[in-house]
Length: 316
Image 1 (cartoon, rainbow, N blue to C red):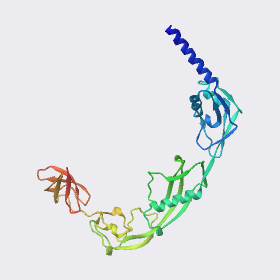
Image 2 (tube, helix red, strand yellow; image 1 turned 135 degrees about the vertical axis):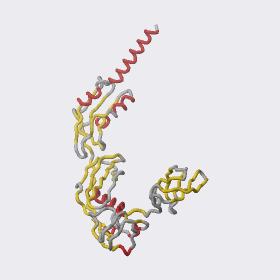
Image 3 (cartoon, one colour; image 1 turned 90 degrees about the vertical axis):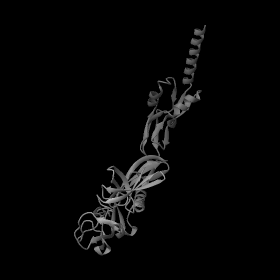
Image 4 (spheres, rainbow, N blue to C red; image 1 turned 120 degrees about the vertical axis):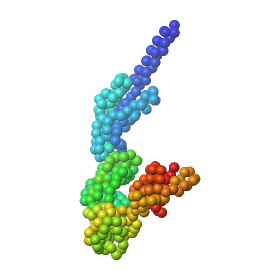
């Protein structure tokens, strides 16, 4: 008896399911417009039926990618039937033989791209505004995008000296969704004060204003770390000998060591709230902020950071 009831129940569900599917009506629209990259059944057809869940499921059924902004693409009855025939073999598909779907178009103009790229350079460059001239090398005349709220950004991991030939990768977002990257190529010319040696300089010397001469020069194609501020030399010494008339760059200098390798140093060992001062021998030359190794009288080697007083701070 129970088995018969179970069979009747299954038959009832099957009949009900078929009836629900037979009552699914899909009426294709003749022409529609979208502002997105994907086309769903609900975009191109009116869908009705007794089973609301099935109707909602069909509305969000993916059909194909939309055309490029401003262009059209067709969705046919046959393609819709092929997508739904497995689950809805008896659904009634009416209306025209095809729906023509146009992607609504918006445009990012060349002037917008250039203005955004130039603004980025001015806000992030290391140079004084009066020292810089920016010219456009290349930029697209216009960029078609799907209609929506357009936002421009520069790639977060973008890194550049922002001098000379510069390509700014502008990310275009529509309705907060990434759409594409459009590069803008600029020439950033920089004319700035820089410094030249007035005499030959030996390794380890510290330069003063009397040792250098300030000149104004186009530095567009010169090294990025060219010294443009005399204060940048404070507390630094020359890493190697320099001949007279050399333009100074940051790579030519290092911080002045507070002690040399083999020198006695004071070590401050900090353990929670306690500080213990002990003597040691430097295993490395050390300037403020350097991480160096020191050898204790016991022969044990520890590592610490040099402070402004030339002490090695070891935190435990």
